[in-house]
Image (cartoon, rainbow over all chains, first blue to last red; front, side):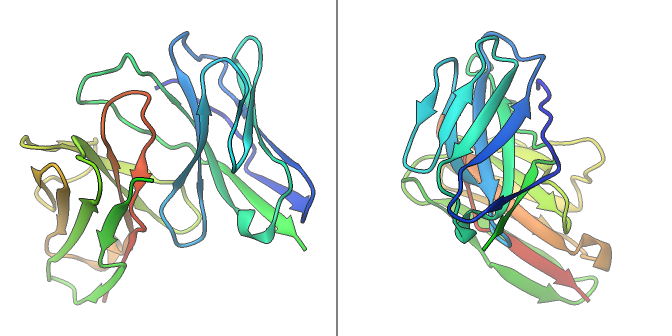
Amino acid sequence: DAKTTQPNSMESNEEEPVHLPCNHSTISGTDYIHWYRQLPSQGPEYVIHGLTSNVNNRMASLAIAEDRKSSTLILHRATLRDAAVYYCILRDPLYMNRDDKIIFGKGTRLHILP
Amino acid sequence: GAVVSQHPSWVICKSGTSVKIECRSLDFQATTMFWYRQFPKQSLMLMATSNEGSKATYEQGVEKDKFLINHASLTLSTLTVTSAHPEDSSFYICSAREGAGNEKLFFGSGTQLSVL
């Protein structure tokens, strides 16, 4: 799996936008960028994913650099419920065999200040 | 959206006993399920990949005789921690996917295992 690097932790004020960066300088042309988050004492949940174009959904936006070596997850208006660990993962849809592994890095622990 | 049900959500057991954790995909067929363990303040560590109808593939350093994985149907995978010891106390999480590659993953809510 291509490696991703994220800051260990970030802090943001409630109701302000949050930009969570992820570097993936060794990304291949077919890797999709996925983001998951893990709330305390829960399993991770899907947030968003994309390939080249920026993506928006009800939870967040994903901004992908033109060279695809980095991406940014954007929470437009953070709430206390967004406090979680956010993981950036690369997945290759061409890796179609049954041994596809999903490896998590350390992620970014997001603290939201009231 | 798709749901993965994992239970029990927590279990306390005595040292030397075995514990079974179930992971079910409720509204899709999970061709592949993944089992992770997570220690406090650490990331998820992949233990094994489970494909329906075949033997699980274990990560290096994970004892296959201690962590028995069965994926007998497209909607159920089980992880049995055999002869549990205090060092096996951890948060265990399962994940399932319907297809391969790009499809998003669905995770169970996790099982907190405490071995006394």
